[in-house]
Amino acid sequence: MFGGAELERVGVSKLWSFLDGSAAAELVTSGQVRSGRGFRVGSYPELAARVAELQYRNRHHVLLYRGQERDWRSVRGFTTLKPTIFRPPDGRKTLPDQLVEERYETLRLAEQRLAEGFEALRALGRQRVARERLLRWAILQHYEVCGTPLLDVTHSLRIAASFASLSVGTSLSADDEACLLVLAVPHLSGAITASAEGGLQIVRLASVCPPSAMRPHLQEGYLLGEYPEMIGLSQKQHYRPFEMDFGRRIVAKFRFEPRAFWGDPAFPCVPREALYPATGDWLEGLAAGIREGLGR
Image 1 (cartoon, rainbow, N blue to C red):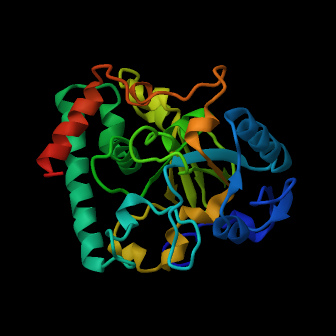
Image 2 (cartoon, rainbow, N blue to C red; image 1 turned 90 degrees about the horizontal axis):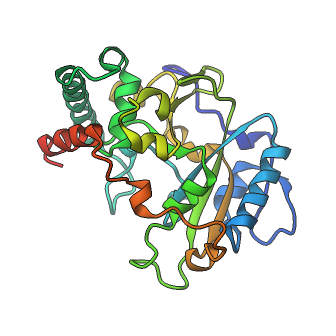
């Protein structure tokens, strides 16, 4: 495809997964997984066992995870995983080009201020941050400064399930279910893995954030992005909306009721204060300053 490789859809050639109501793993397409309700699990040990089977059966892929408080759907009824910069506003089905341009302008300004902040603090890694756009995007996305073309995932199943359970005790009722998505990627290698064939880049946050910034390391975070990088509206126009959706990499979808799910004391939910540690993270402070300067 002109402008870069189309994001590979892992489910075109069938992979092993669990569908709602199935008794065992079966060969399915990504579309079957995304359109279904998701496989119901009752506990974290059960989830871990199911995912272990998926990793064994789909041995040519590496599995990454994303926990959500709900299953977001496209207008066609498929689970959707779009980067923040490409998500339509609340109540809208489409994303206006003007809004995309505005978001990219905000992103460019945030990048500039991030690089300047690293330089002013003489922070470890400041030269890499100044040189590499993808690293700036990764930090801005992880610290939720503004929309970027990247999607947050994790290599830790427990961290993902804990993120999906964050609303327990607030908005979730006893009958509400959380959602955990399993995504398949080709391989992981070093700080940044680029797959031209798959049209995918994978950033390992622990390798791009300074060690004094603890949050990315504790969350075992990764970020997914298009390859080549989606640098603006002019490049986006060469892609159809569904081609910029990481839902195309979903290999399994699980749902669970958080209160019952974490019932085993040997496998407790990671609490919010551990997911977002109050460690005096200087990078969090820098990100907060940029966010405030952007009026967000």
